[in-house]
Amino acid sequence: MIEVAGLTKRYGEKLAVTDLSFTVRPGLVTGFLGPNGSGKSTTMRMIVDLDTPSSGTVRINGQRYRDFRAPLCEVGALLEARSVHSGRSAHNHLLALAQTHGIGRRRVDEVVELVGLAAVARKRAGGFSLGMGQRLGIAAALLGDPGTLIFDEPVNGLDPEGIRWIRTLLKDLAAQGRTVLVSSHLMSEMALTAEHLVVIGQGRLIADQSVADFVAAASGNTVHVRSPRATELRDLLLSTDVTVRADGPDVLEVSGLSSDRIGIAAAGAGIPLYELTPRQASLEEAFMTLTRDTVEYHGGTPSSPPGDPTTTAGRSGAELVGTAGAVVGGPGARA
Amino acid sequence: MTAATVERPAPSGLAAGAGYRVTPWRVLRSEWTKLRSLRSTLFSLLAAIVFVVALGCLISWARVQHWDQESPLERLRFDPTGVSLSGVFLAQLAIGVLGVLTFSGEYGTGMIRATLTAVPHRLPVLWAKAVVFAAVTFVLMTISSFTAFLLGQGVLSSRHIDTTLGHPGVLTAVLGGGLYLTVVGLLGVGLGALIRSTAGGIATLFGILLVLPLIVHFLPSNWSDNIDPYLPSSAGQAILSVVHDPTSMAPWNGFALFCGYAAVALAGAAVALRRRDA
Image 1 (cartoon, each protein chain N blue to C red):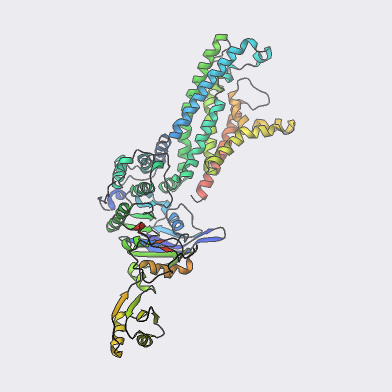
Image 2 (image 1 turned 90 degrees about the vertical axis):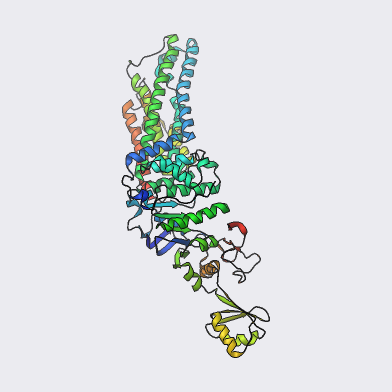
């Protein structure tokens, strides 16, 4: 259990994290989302006492990180930037960390095996690919068999097989009753692995809820309706809480009403329907809607309009590049 | 690489087992593993050994070859101990760089984050690095210093211009070779932790040891005469000279002051390590 309370981090004039409070519970994977520069990494560094908060506290299982007698056995952390000396072999890197706690060589070999680096364990880490570096970081996080795990962008640089491996690993770790906090800018990854979300924008908490609630609460849920008497239907449905957008001569996108209600209303008025399809916003769209105002670095919009409602996202492997507009759908993250 | 799955006991496994905790002795072992597992350590120490021993022999040999042409004044000032230990001045480069790298190498690569999450109290890391570095350097450089002295005297004995460890001040100077290099390295450890960058740390260390004395020489001479003996380099090198120069500090006093400078650097490093974000 990680309890973050009133956490604030100030760098000179700039507030990186502002009065952030949330709780990460054991037994499920909690996703930590936010655009680039929103304070995710800063928060994670404060959890393990690398950075000192300007105010506020972090408690892990009720204790401060620095008060643990065996911190590696309590919290395992994979931090965003590589935390490995490039001149040292993977084995010696892990051995040096293990020795601070009196953890034996057997466990070092075990985690090397677990992350699939056995073949290169004696090679210098400087020659590792980004993906191998991530695996080494994960090995270090697992070294003390900790009950709490913090992963900052763990799938960065991993190949599809590696991504699937991480996904399974995260779920297994949570299923064993551990507390797992994972940050990622890959929405698709969060949709597949996380059950709970903590969303921040510009260092402030935006949402702290289950993935299902988060998506449901987002304004992106619409119903796609096709009818020969579309204009008539639109006038019938329109009210203060309901918006209707015409998407062609006989197509409507209705938000604020369930498909059931639309069907009943249409039947009541004798309007025939050719199509009535509820469309749930993808996690990505929900995220975009919520963070649109808090994105720090805006980029230009290339070709497609932002939040294109026809995206069947959530599985598209789209990558958030720190802009509200430039959502680039690509096969990159697809496993 | 294969897709490994987690097949381990529940979280109670390692964490619950007593005995896993951070102790100063364990941090020391960890830092020993770190030091010995880098090639830069091996190369720096090898270079320092070669510099101390080979340069001492080479310069001793040069003096022997040139002895007939040397003036009576040169012969009068001849210090067989100093000549055989001349390699120490070159070796300080290798040892100083190695000292700076113990911390700056970790900051440069990001290793420091792994180190400090394992030891969140931080200061044990500084002391462990300093102790391991000092022990290794002192043992190797003392052996090198004695080897250089003995080989150098062997070379000088062909002209009967050698000395022995029994002469006044000689044993102190030969021991001083190892001691001086060790403290140069510790000054480097402190500066490396304080400055965090390899280039900055090395520039500062050798700015203090090599450039500062040159600049002080340009001051009016009654100023420079009063400042120079107390500079880190002059104070530290006082222990290396057998022929006592009245303007410089006494060997052990000078060495004590030099240790003081290193202590100040390490204390500054301790404060910075505790206070600053990693």
